[in-house]
Amino acid sequence: MTQKVFFYVQHLMGVGHVFRAARIVRALVAAGFEVDLVFGGVPIPDFDSGATRTHFLPPVRAGEAVFNKLELPDGTPVDDAWKDNRRKILLDLFERAQPDIVLTEAFPFGRRQMRFELLPLMEAAQARRPRPLIVASIRDILQANTKKPERDHEVVEIIQSYFDHVLVHGNPAFTRLDDTFRLTGEIADKIAYTGLVAPEPPPASERAGVVVSVGGGALGHTLLKTALQAKPLCSLRDEKWTVITGLRTSEAQKEELSALASGRLEFLSFVPDLPALLAAARLSISRVGYNTVADIYAAGCRAVVVPLSDGIETEQITRATLMGRHGLAEAVAHTDETPGGIAAAIDRAIEAPMPDRAAIRLDGAPETARLLARYTRVAAASA
Image (cartoon, rainbow, N blue to C red; front, side, top):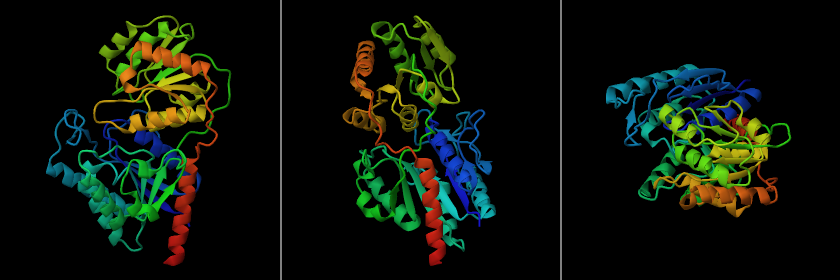
């Protein structure tokens, strides 16, 4: 009998969560699941999740001035009536789908702003008979709650009240959930590690050139500028550089980047297959988001990584530190994000041996499908 997954995905700022979720969706469908993807963010042009059915909730994003304040795409703050309507739409979709599994991306470790609809969804799933499994899908490194540690207790309470399993999309030999979530011991019986959710490794090819990328581009303009300023200072100055600005880079920012252009250079707003581009590159220069790192590992290229540091973000700093410590990339401290600092890191990365990443598991998407299939078999056997 075909198992049905109801997968809730809400992006609030960056789009990395969405592309990781899409890799999971495609693996689930390939394994024989039916997937209802419920998408709550601002639509992404030409995005294909591969789901059996995709349902678009009224879109919402994080506030541009205050992250934890929700607003509509035009900047209008959401009100209670809007929340009531969206919650009703979500619960109606759940009732029609009649899933065997409810899968939440990030929640309850993230997406706290969406509790107005997600906690009612949890209650509906708890009350339904037969009760679906409730599973969380989270990345390997979490944003630290250093200012409000009581929220960790809130996460544990929600997990213990509703969730059957927590899938951590990472490698425990590299980093464990304990490293960034201090109360992991209280939910240890629910946790399973899947490996990184990465693309299929592209075919090997002759390597040349440099690729500079910053994901969606919303928080990467400084790195793009600094990398272009580093180009004439480093040993790869005569190579072709491909600079992927991201979909959220403004026209004014693109003009600023063009003024820094030197030598062989190509600007692109977006590429549909970044791993294939990286597989043909000598070097990647990027931020340290989850998906970008997974793409680097799959492509097998050398890498210089520069974490985002805005006084709030901790995830990328943690990941960059670990990558540098394990010899997986040349990590640039956020305090050294200068033309000279990046040029020196480029030279170090090129002169060093190719990183040994053989121990990094990249099968997180198919492993997620295997685990969900096993969980449903066990649940059916015990029913």
